[in-house]
Amino acid sequence: CRTQLLTLETTHESITLTSEYALHHGKLGHAASIVNLWRECFYKATKDQKLAFLYFANDVIQKSKPDGYDFLTPFHGIFPDVIEGAWREADQEMRDKISATL
Image (cartoon, rainbow, N blue to C red; front, side, top):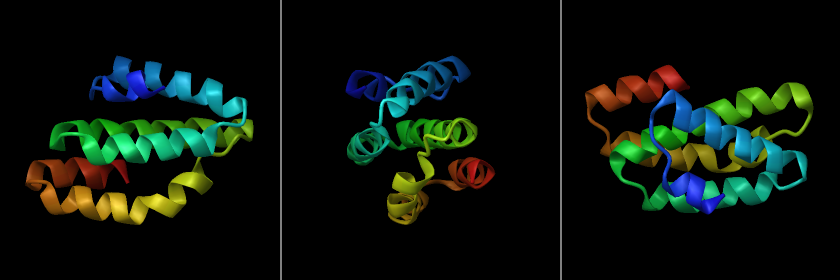
């Protein structure tokens, strides 16, 4: 999953493919591990990549809830710090995109 996250882009295709990969492994009980890896990669990402990471998190959370393998709980514990950090370094255009995602 590390490779998929490190190559994540803001395109719909990239978000969807990476999300599906994570959801598959979430079904196997690895949601918390994936979120920890996501956090590690997020902090190393460029400003533009961080938006892709937020899109990915949103997609995974939305798609995992109906199937019962919840990514919300592990993301809940890290999101306040992640969003605050992304917000601080974002320009207005990026802030508008972050706000739309939340």
